[in-house]
Length: 184
Image 1 (cartoon, rainbow, N blue to C red):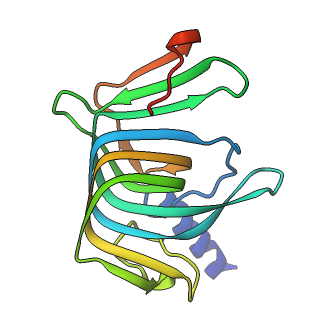
Image 2: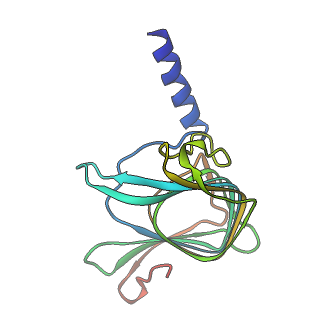
């Protein structure tokens, strides 16, 4: 019982400090994220599943970034069947949004990317560049890089988790009708 308690305590401590991504049920709805530029240190990527409360699973690309900065961040989610869009904007005027221990379950990603010191095809269970605990299944495809820069980022995601997410200049709006436009 003592070893199990110690392991459970270490997991809770790691989650509280952003070292281990929290596992949670996704809503089943995607959201859009854009940024003029993302700069990250410690990047990993591998395949995974995002699961809803009813057990429905969605295949995703899991990306982990140890430290990230995002310029002109926009996040939007459209209410199904209605002309309503919730939009969050941050990281403008030369003051980027910042995240640590960033984990993203995504359906798609677009932009102009540059990776430094990248390994493509690494066993996903051996990834060690990203946030602690950001590893995939043994024998599965993975990739990692010391740094990543993505200009004109366009991403469709199912979930995001961060140990810390600082949204400098946060602006949240609920947009209706003709003004209900997503980030892209």
